[in-house]
Image (cartoon, rainbow, N blue to C red):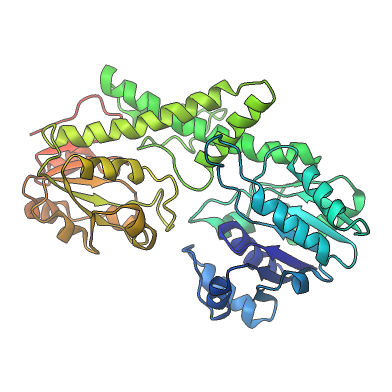
Length: 440
């Protein structure tokens, strides 16, 4: 199959590379000349484990190319995927569809034969019908169908998610479009991965419902963590106890500083807005958004408590600022709420993150960036574990404690146990969702 992928952001680039690895001929398109030049030179503009190797393999095989020329990429393509950004529109919570509709209009003008226009971007219910209208208006003679094919990629594990998905969701309105999409995903069908074919609106809704549900699970366990801290109990044991119930499952039950990233904040906000627009308030989702903001603020108070209730003059080493490990993504990361509060309170903040510096330097002004957690902790008053990178899971805690001015740890990911930390020379350990914050 010949595929054009419009947009080389996270979703577009990963999808394009993986489709080419299926054996399809893929052209990835972007308006940014600099980004296309990087890709043509073999440089990957995002951090995703394994993506550089897979991209190089398929470029070398001649199945994957990059261009700024949308018309040439669309000409003769069996399917054109729209994978441009749909950021939250400032002021009202709506998903901004400006880039989607602009792409649809350009695609329409370039279509020369039957093509399936596939929306890969996360879009509100009803968007694909609007895409159809835009294409029809821009090129009344165009022979095309529209399909919805939402992505379910976890940053840091995107290639595995694409190659071994829980399911592939395809929304179509014609048998011909369904056949094209089936051929595109044939390598997965042959390995018995579930392919769910449905109508356009259901496919659009599935994406929002899935992300809102996962965000709800995270927020629920964070609320339970707060209650454990007041009433007693260990949230890790509680999560294990409920996660063993097959109806609940153990995924997304890890207490921490709240969800962030490119999907959950944007998609919960959009779903809440869709509900308001249809006079059906999404009350659970709206509460999840509010509680998630409160969770981040609660983390600030944990750190303040460890700093003797005053950030002023304290040195705080923060380990990890990306919203999750194995990504360089800083979008809506808890660090963007927590770190500015430390600096605003007068703290000197040192940051270590394996991939976060490129974006973080602009987003977290006033911090000192270091590569070594032990150097960051030297003479520090508190060390804060904020993102659970593997590099931070096996620290020599004795060495870390010896370098600090006062050996205090705030572990916002529950990486370590209080017994281990306190037994390694720390005077204070503060975790999330533990009934008593033990001190020596």
